[in-house]
Image 1 (tube, rainbow, N blue to C red):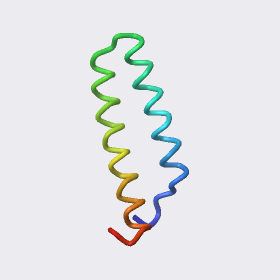
Image 2: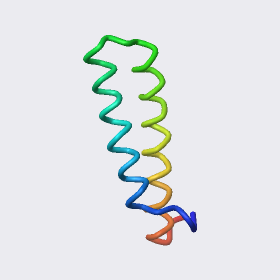
Image 3: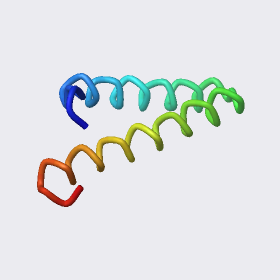
Image 4: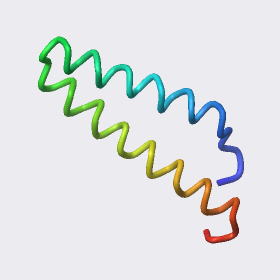
Length: 57
């Protein structure tokens, strides 16, 4: 996972979470689905980055 900036990834995760909340507030089912899937993928990527740092990857 060389080249992935953890801080930038964390910022994207935070922004995506905010988008999920906004989609929920506006009752936009398509946006909730899209941003939820994106958030899940980003969190999985973050787990992989951490695992690699710990030598588990």
